[in-house]
Length: 408
Image (cartoon, rainbow, N blue to C red):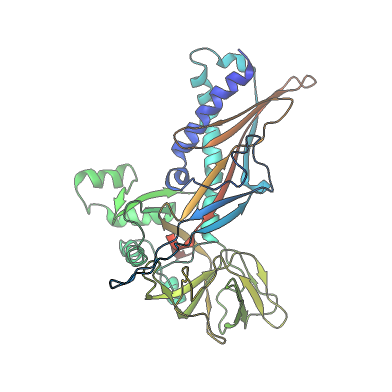
């Protein structure tokens, strides 16, 4: 049997196993718009795909209705080397996996660990993208943040209230929690329900569905370590760029840092509901998308994860931050995320085949997950090297993601 036939069979099993076990593969949207067709030759670093967010119509009252365009938003995602996740290892001859039990032996020898290792890295990457993008949170002041915990059902209900206000779909609400906060929540829920539910919580460490959210937990959500500017008193707004993406601040210490993923509260600005566009009681919290360093005078320009818009179909705030408005910068935190499928897009893409090796690229038909396997031997070393790779890109539409942070 030709090696490429064997590798094709084995990598199909890996793609299926990865898509079944990876939390974000199951919960995320996987659609994208490709400007250059299916790209049968495979994608490489530097190319761009476009992810689409469907626009919302404006609701009017009365009999007279004017035709309106529904404005979609397209988010370009440029592929980089850091979007490629690989595992390489030495194997014997693949011929030993050609019999009826060969696929099971390969899975037991290598497959389970490959899927677990790739899955952990991809889940961590997805969580980091959400940390650097999401801005919706019921914990909208530093005072609330300093008192935050996830040890009762109250935080869950706070997330529910914000999700309801933002009109997030009731059909696919999910919450992914870090293991520490999930454990605290489970302890508080013990013996609160019927025997079957209590057994799931106590014996299987499984919350299931709570307050309309399907709960998942993972140890791969990293703690966010804030920049040295966190907690600085007296920081104020000096300007906002015309595109709403760069916020200028003053009042930090010289050379103070803000890191990608840092949270900044601007209490004087209120969020708008994403459907009706009415003003809420929730204060604005913005997220830093790129590391920044303050000048010697304590001024800093911060690039935000999403533009602040007070007009137009995608407006999201009651008013733009005024000059001299006070801001608060959050300290280190643990993250828990609630989102719908519209909030997170996770796309696996076919990679270009490698010449001179048994190179196979396959797609799991159920999940749409692409996986790449190469197998190549060295005549000088007598070793066979197998490499399994994923090309995985993420995009976050933060209007559909809520973070519940807990001070760490």
